[in-house]
Image 1: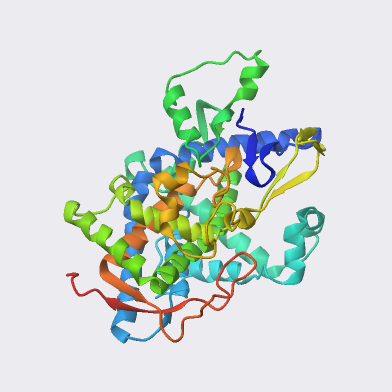
Image 2: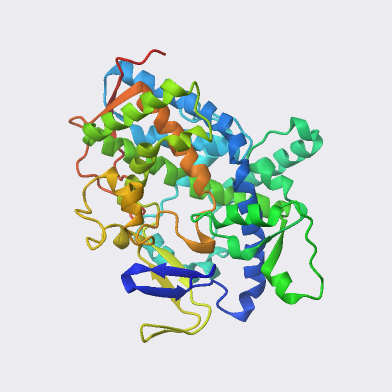
Length: 444
């Protein structure tokens, strides 16, 4: 039976027990992760809805910039446009800052964030450190890096200043963004079971419904199993600063890559683009505006995004530490060893995907998904350590693509690189050059 601490991997056709608290000395660290994870899950659950206006504001800026490219008739790097868009979204929802990174690159936030991402992860030495992080950890504090220290100082001061401003405002005047939602759980007495840390399979959402976050459950101080099973939603200011940093790192390039790859694939396959636009047109014949609820109706858009993430997964591998000695098909997985799940291999395995190199959105119809092993597709991971920002990322991507393909046709051109050359993390090495034109039947 699959527990919240297990991950099923099809390439071995078995169950793996893959908790991350590999040694007794890490129990305190694991407890800290559980506490922060809980706070983030409750933050990212139902409150995603209030962030739609913030995403819409960034989307409007993106559409204005794309319109200028459509009017020019020239090819352009759409990956760069999406990098600016996701930067604007993160600045807005995580740091409470309104920026236009494409038209105002000298904004202090944009300047420091650009320096942050200018640090390359693709040099051979950095690839080695990514593969063996335990080597880097003891060295990180010893290596001088003036630029890194300046960036750290800027973002820490930025977040601390914003926290003070929010605390000075009455609750009704506080902006409903990711930063504020984290601030709301700084000292909550509410509890949630650790068994439901699975965002991908909606186990966290079920937990909130079943247990009732406001039901006032009490847990006896002497009951150790209850203490272990449940954790408080609490975050310190330092933890809020740290999570905002992680949100910047994890949410910027992954989302911009997915958006750019989706447009690239649709430009190369106009038949799929036309089918998507038919769905988009039908959607706006029924709805005046798009919001968190009604965008879930866009089934073909969801299929396009899923297939894009299959071909270009944000993470090519997922690592877990083995918590206890475990036998799998006669193979011993010793406690303390690292288990690596090759998401990239699973996504291209011909045993599960017919013609895996091809872009076929229909792979993700309800019937096709039901007939396929659930864990041969892992764009957001799985289990209690799956991507906590998945819902927000999906919403951001859907809102952007919905409005883009309502207004524009995406076209490959002589400058479009086929096939694309990718970085180690599956980002386009040379950008993505396409052309874009205004749709004839769209009235602004």
